[in-house]
Image 1: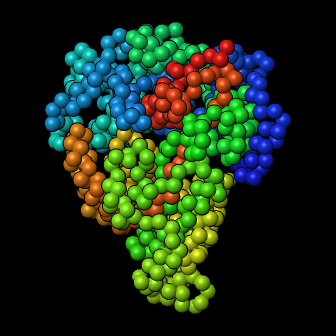
Image 2: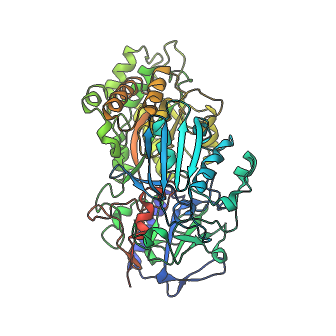
Image 3: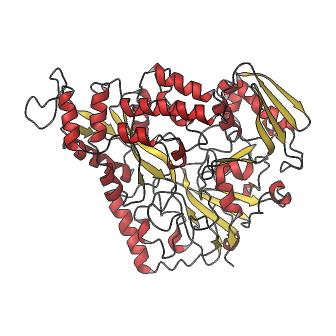
Length: 577
């Protein structure tokens, strides 16, 4: 999800070296952050980039490429989630929890106001959840499980028709942004939910839009509010930056816009190859040494199980064993990512991984064992060209696809092709841009793709849902791109969803069974854990998150992370001056 385009890898590294050779002194602008016809004092501005790709598509927090900071800086959520401590953070809600087998109760924190001065109330919460009545709302299915929503003052009670989807519902609570009912009263249909937009969104967060500085082709500018409920109630520090300015990137990519090396930028959330060369020389990362970044999601080699021979689990396992992931981590990423274990479960979910089962059923790179497994399963080199054929003697030539210009993935793709060759598996590249890649992946027209769709979350249920979700549709947009059909793990995943979150023993047992199926069936092949790319410098702002401090926050502006601990990294920054 974090991406830097698209100088070639060699060209970007060379450019970095050239900049470093000049000074790497990190001296800032003489003056102000400017653009879009409006300038801002540099020492009061937190300047970020690397998240927004292409033009900004307004401030609708429900769909698409909305402005960075819309959720988190402006529109807040009832709860937040800290993935490093694995705990929920009461936020707009003083408390939010299941108070009965079919009852969920939200107690709204008193004293919160919208940026227009109106009080934030229980009725506002109910209004937002009721937008789920429209079929294109991402929480529509969950909304359909409700019997009623009742409001009494600051208390909102949700009653379910049957056993709740506990995991999904709790996930929704910290991911549904609260929009202002006065502005959102224009939402009266599915079409108006999708087209919803406003010139200046009204929110409860610490910042509001600076309309004069906003340019959808260039940047969004957020200006600090005079009063923010969280700092007023001493729940969070008042943020020091007067302005948060996030720059969009287009085809030129980094460093065409603000960058760290001349201090025109403070935080870059894009992937920058060879950044490890500069850590300790003015550039900061979360860890002071490899892997430098927190892990954000898993990179998979996704096989299309509807294509021969990828429907055969023995072939999929042999393919998994043929890939030298350690080599990719060392020579493509130079230690900037972490090799994934065979479950693919992220490091934050380590407690849920059955280590004994992983040891006995997992797989690792071995071309020799991969060739042996292929031979046992009936895949042999019939014509002597060095590649195995199908069991019926027909040729195998699998196509692998990644987006053109994603240099690290293109390098990994080439390494996968060469690694699989040593096991006798022929793979060739399917070249195309990002749109081609997405079309192939979503429509099922591919053989193999590298994919990172499933993100870090509060619960491994989201991960198993990604792997096993049924039914398979003509177009898959967010889950089960491998089109793997097996009702057993899907039913287990649904049971996991409907198991209360405090039933740890039952949840552990269910996840063990799911992991066993995953390890034996190999519906997806875990490769590496993708870093939450974040590079910063301290010419203007200090106290960045780091592993060797108490500021253990995700230092990223990426969508979905601000309602985790992204807002905390901003509120804990200090002015260098």
